[in-house]
Image (tube, rainbow, N blue to C red; front, top):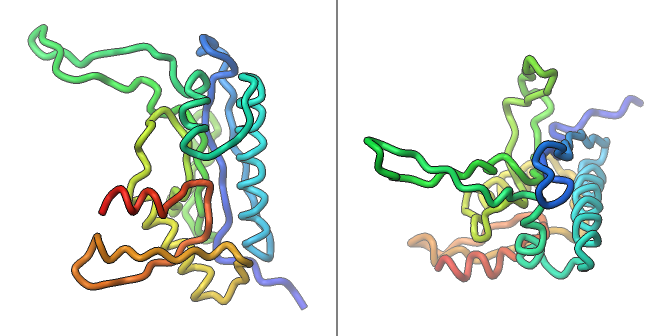
Length: 199
């Protein structure tokens, strides 16, 4: 009997600085994780992510405590600390984040997604959702990320895929008029605290 390919898989990608001040020699990350049992691919992508985080933290003499602490501790690897400004008529009107593309991102990718290849040879999947990231934005965990995690959970639920003990339920009734519970699969982010702070 032939295994049926899951309806989705995982991708990790990103760009980080090797050390503070090494903007010319970045670490480029891109890897696909597929498995007939999607939860195994998910575990593998998050372990791969954590290995990078541990190496960067170790280089600073630190150990992993939480996602929130890690965002602060790895700034040298995702932030050049260089400021650029958008000017209009000689007046500075906005600061530009020149490091917006630095960090590590984990995506759930639909297996039937259209694929594009850039001139540089990078593979881009059209139908993917960002489910986890770490970058230079201290407080940028937003509801789009939470909603993408709800979408990911729905893929497991409606397709009957095993998800182990990773399921987490959150009461998001403070965000809506009617009480409602949302389910996601666990990530390094403490969404209980994130949602509590937003209510």
